[in-house]
Image (cartoon, rainbow, N blue to C red):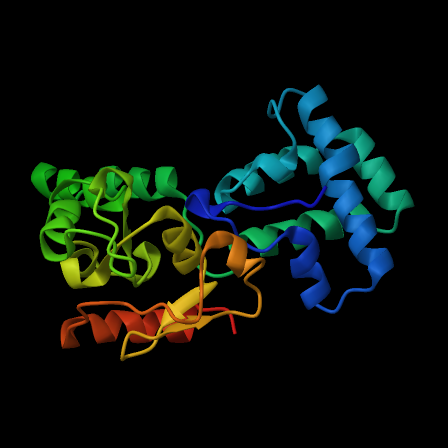
Length: 246
């Protein structure tokens, strides 16, 4: 079984594949993979830190909290010392894996919005709805697109409203800007948001070599983004440069 991280529900590269692309040896890949989904997951569950394995975590912030608790366990300290910091290295590797690109810790982002004293209540409401792909942000995308921006699929109930320039990299005005959004079917949204696909300035799809089994996902090189406007390009340019995985 391969470990797959899902950011905002994304099918992204596996932890195993990510480590291989970091040029780790097969022995190191196996060692770190076993430590994360095996013994340290057991320690986390046995000590009540969480109810499932470490590999079920998709938020970097959440993982850091659990990792801190694990590092405080006597058994962790003992085994890590004997293993010459192997367990610590495994935790660090998985943390970097979760942090690659722009992580989508929605709960943390919403907490930040709520705690911001400079925002009025109405502004907070608009930003929170925008963060979860709802409210006026979604309404404007549906009105502009009336379907998937790539396939034209019309049932908007099944489409995802997502930001082009990631939330964490955007200012509040950009977070509410409909030109910083795409309405996509879930498989395309997940792949786009995790940097496994992007789009050229003319709308042509660009597929990352890290995209696994694109054909099964229904993603092909013939796909194009429709109804592109000049206002989209600053956001799309950011996505190509900072989010896409070459």
